[in-house]
Image (cartoon, rainbow, N blue to C red; front, top):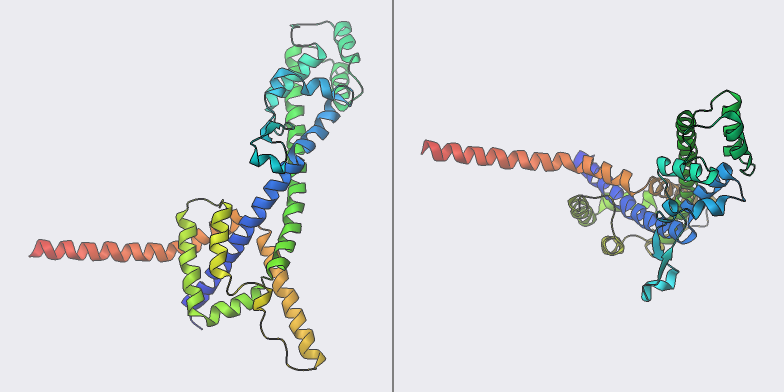
Length: 312
């Protein structure tokens, strides 16, 4: 077994995982933007903070309205450049605290006695935010500055939970899309590894594409890059390139063929679901030794030449 040949096979597989992972990332981004999943996750937690009845009033505050991202109104709006503000996706914790204090009528108050504070908080609808304030007041926290500090810590935790909820949902999209794209392309890792091992031409294509991917200096590829790169593999990737079916009626041979196919597709789906950034970083690490070696050789040659020139 040649170590360099095995490394070339690994690079070829990593490039394919990176390209399919980039495609999954793009589709996931489109789905998230179209369904506003990040904004919906955040809104869930804002409702927990202020309640159903006050969520509209909170979002309408100017400091929050300014945070609404502008995107195409619908999928077909790209042709007419029709845009509109979408759901808020991110709120700095300080901005959310200010907005909540505005909503509760606490912003202009420097100091309040216990009765005044309880009266203002009582006007808020039932929510986790109201319960937190009541709990703090019962503990004897009545200073506006102290309440603001506690609210900041509380909201920071809630915003992190909202972000974690979005990440979990996005991860589900990634896993489902990874399975779908793997089956759609019929990218069987076992078959592809065998093909790369036996084809010096395909290994050369993979090495060239690995260099091109790393040269782009970024894990995110646009759609045209992905299509162009996958095009180079189109002669060897896909259901139409499935290896020859077992030429026998032996159940054992067919069972082994199906088992290896399922395992090969499963490995691809699991690898692609790791994301393009993971494979890009790994590709940089795998290809850098050869680059460094080439650079060292060039430097050594240059030094020898310089020494020869000096001697002459």
